[in-house]
Image 1 (cartoon, rainbow, N blue to C red):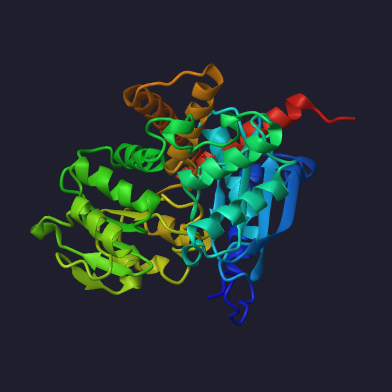
Image 2: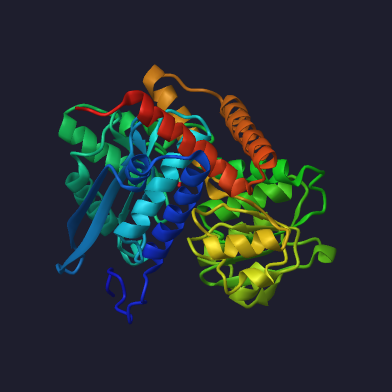
Length: 428
Ligand code: GLU
């Protein structure tokens, strides 16, 4: 089976280009609100460094496949570049640029001292053996080696990568340096200097942001989660733990539903089912649901936790949830955003809702620098504090200036990066 992008008739505008258009539109709105001049707008709209590499991979049967890899550093005015690495067949340079830009605003919004970056390889990791994946990861890292480093650019997990991938990255970098450099990546396994609470951090942040946005007891509130991967599954679990009724979840294999009156889904049992079978489809204690219906269910809270462009101008008019909390990066297009807002729904934007991951990445770096580790309670307390403070800043800014939460979050994030850029001035 091919590990590269399946050759379909190319869409007029690729999903990656659509994501970048969305990111640029959001930047433009914030820049307009902040009254930034054209020169600064162009600086903020353009990646600082952008690298495309070819990654040859020797397959188990001896064949050689070549896939494309990317690493984009969008902005480093506030500190080293920070952001995950994605292994996904649909990834391209536009998508990675959009994701890097969102990382810049995300880090600025939650007040951690990083710029924004993202990396990716256009590959389907599910068709590779572990050894093929290791070879691919090491070769990709070798190609982007000049860019990364604990003081330059620090990768982390994203879609299709995990702590094993981070361990290979750390090892490849360390072998090249000649000594162990744990601080070159975050989301590492605990044995290599990882942080307690990192693997569930994005989901914990989504839970904290959801509860803050609800502003009332979560008891009995109904929730649908699109995506039952690293972020979605634990978000569903944490919201169920908080008293919500998670009535529907989906992944690429299908969607399942259990009504609130029947108690909703048993998320722990469903996670066990998924780890045994590879997907939610066929789970016996729930009804099957057509995939597209999940986003349109009559629930209190909708959590898109899969990929970009899930809620579009086409389906937004049918979204009935009053609160949408973005576990994924870029799941709502600008057109959908306008429709949701006009219909009175509240959207907690990605750069706020899913910032828990990079916040605990930052805490991991701080622990690595001190060669010390905090308890999971200490990590969670700091995470909670940063997400809740950012949430209340965004909420106050939105109320004071008549903005949506996304616009307010971007005004804060973009404003901080613009200020850093202006303070530093231009060289030469
Ligand atoms: N991939 C995550 C994100 O999109 C985490 C990035 C990081 O920890 O650097 O926010």
